[in-house]
Length: 458
Ligand code: UD1
Ligand code: MG
Image 1 (spheres, rainbow, N blue to C red):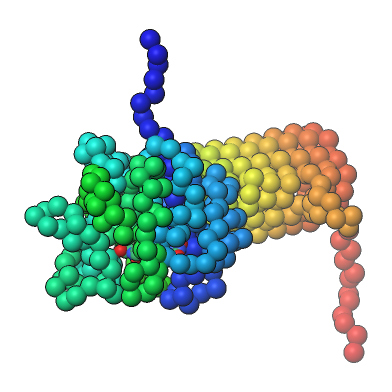
Image 2: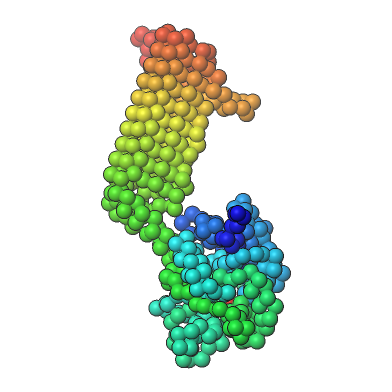
């Protein structure tokens, strides 16, 4: 028996050539971020998540910048030479070379979710449609194209600028998203003529053209968010608010305690375990994963870091690409720079900075310390004001290694490269330039001299 794969291939064409004049920003509109991700990236991510393999983006304004965002996602840029309208834009993406189903999406509609796209495709397949426009019923349809029906059946899309007073009253609008069989799209597009007030090639015309040919052309209704397009900074902020709410709700539903959710900044990939408490003005960004029963005090800012259960992160900490073990206590005002690894039950206090440093379990650095390119063992005490001198005059970085159970007094400098053996003690104020054997005491400072009966001159 032949093993025939009956699922048609799925492609997406994203329209993103516009400048977005009303954004009043030099950045191409589709690159404006909504909660950390450029709008066009959100659109592509959603298309990918429903199985779109071929990702084509119509580019124009800011082409090279847009390419830098979309190409790493596996998408291909299709330049549109002149912006002659949405139909011309789709034609620029060479739909004749596609098979199966094509979804057309606007690069500036950032609120579409995978569930929306899934249900649109399911509907399309169930109805055995050839072409579909995705619609939504809006409170304020504004300048969006109106969906004209006759006896419930889709008849046409009329642009607001071309619509009469009665048509403008319609509240069902064109979201700007379409699904079509590739061959239908390729056949209808060349038939579009610029017969409208703007003299543009309107993609919306393929609806009436398809109906004239007797094809199965349908309107599939979706949530109003699907039709939410960003044209201004105010609308961008509104879109961000929607995504923040979505992300915060996800954490709340997972049992995270938030004292004032509206002030917490949460990006899409962030996870927080149940029973953790997140205070106001906390920023959780990138791929950050926080365990259960953690406390994140006000003003904590965490980027793509992993924090194990029962950690207490005090106010004002800033972590980036760091890994933190269970039951640690960090801050207030500590900074973990990339590749910092803090072991379980460790304590990092105020004004301590770690960079490319592994800090062992149960070790402590309570105050005013810089540890860079260092490996600190377990059960180590790092005294106040200790620093690693990791960057040398030759502009290279050198390693400091401190063994288990070492006691480092206050105000010590480790001039790297240097190794301290297990159980050693470093006297306060020492400048350590040579290795220290295990279990020994190192003192490296000028001796104190007391001069009796001495008063300053003059
Ligand atoms: C379009 C629809 C309208 C729908 C609305 C939804 C048409 C004629 N009208 O209107 O019915 O309600 O979207 O948002 O299609 N673009 C290009 N090249 C072009 C023109 C546009 O890439 O030559 C891109 C834009 O950058 C944008 C998208 O296509 O991402 C939509 O274009 P836009 O000018 O915003 O169309 P609307 O007038 O809003
Ligand atoms: Mg628009």
